[in-house]
Amino acid sequence: MNTFAYPATLTPDTQNGGFEVTFVDLLEVITHGKDLADAIHQATKCLEETIAARISDNEFIPPPSPANEGHCLVHLPAQMAVKTALYNAMRNASISKTELAKRLNCDEQEINCLMDPHHVSELSRMEAALLTLGQQLVIGSMPKETTLWVSMRSTHPTFFS
Image 1: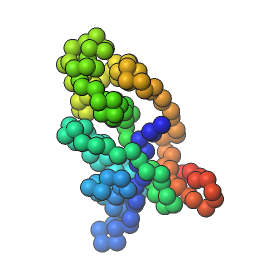
Image 2: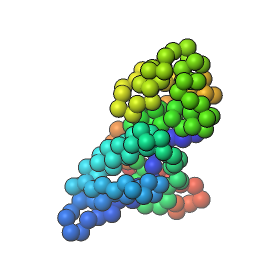
Image 3: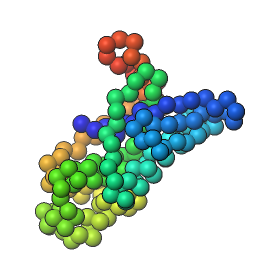
Image 4: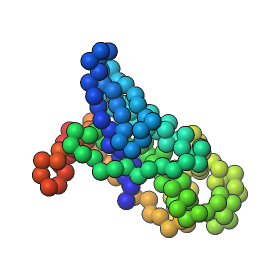
């Protein structure tokens, strides 16, 4: 199961203050925040735009690597995570938008909207598309203030805020 939580490294910026953020799986992604909370916020926005660009350009989206000690997990926002799951499912099944539209008994324009990273889509339609492709949408939640840092001191990772 892909939770779309990408490990990132936050490095203190000794020259300008704040933190620089880089991603383990998306080497082209780099951003900066004036403090820890801003760095995570900027990282989330940057991650979302990077994934949106990859969808728009029909490029491969790597699954998140396991986080190692010292990494922060940056979560893709929910709407983009579902669109990414749908995009990956279509690529993995080698299904065209036209074929998916036939299977969902809709026109291709609806599929274009479902696949458009900047179009807000109905969750029920994205879920139906995923089910058509043999994928089950699973949703979870956590406290808003929780930032997941990984500690590998034991044989199993532990998460703490």
